[in-house]
Image (tube, rainbow, N blue to C red; front, side):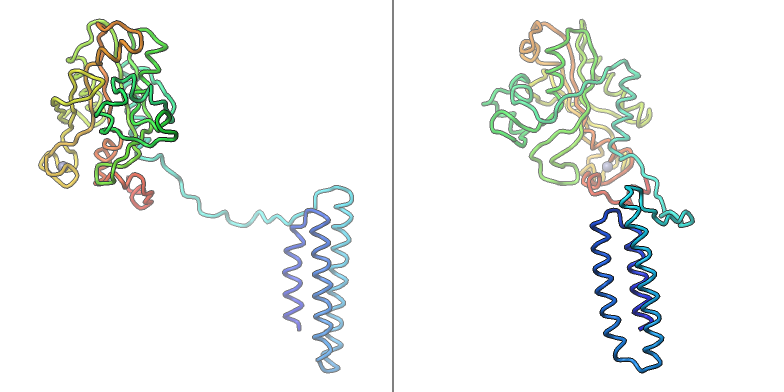
Length: 332
Ligand SMILES: [Zn+2]
């Protein structure tokens, strides 16, 4: 009996301290009346001595809470805030300081390096038109190179998730005249199967430099210099012939594998090199499409940004970047 009374007292007391409106108060009052009825029913089963003691306790409980109900009812009627019990001595929960995600950290490093080198930053939408993502980049609808960059469509065939940030370059060229140096960082999407080096959503930093006399040597220097500023002078970068529809000539760009120092490991598939970028001299058709002369000179490049944090933080598999494994992040 005593326990039951104490329990009602505690539960009702804590609920009462949270009451903010008269509806809540009514509910509590009716449940209190129900509890009293139960207590009186329980009391009947007791012996004479205990009955007297229990009756006294129930009366005290009834008086106490009726008085408290009345105080709250008056406060609510006056529109005043109901006093809540605030205990300033309670310790706050343990606070874990967060960190910036490795992808964003390396992305910011790249942005800083290119800004130091004189580039501006351009952004564009992730939901893109076919025209900007493929058509104006020398990939008409029948072009087989579209298969290399298959993406997700929101409305086939015109509205899609961008498969590269080159569409930002097209948008930029339509609004600006050369000379300029820009980078366009951001998320891109492709229908790629997940493996240690591929995920269907990844980050890119693309660059575009257009101006008189811009040549392949400038391209090679700009790309090599930017990653050496992040990974150190000992890093090796190699360029090999490649095909992209929007550049001619085009190059695939590899960096010596940081994980194994170039000896060969699982991450670099035993080659000692990691494919980290594509690049080339902008195709005359692209310049013509944005209203420039076909003789315009410029180079473009695109870093697959997910590969760089893998190498910078020595993370063996790209998908780890998306798995939110706190034990891994805490070590970085
Ligand atoms: Zn390796």
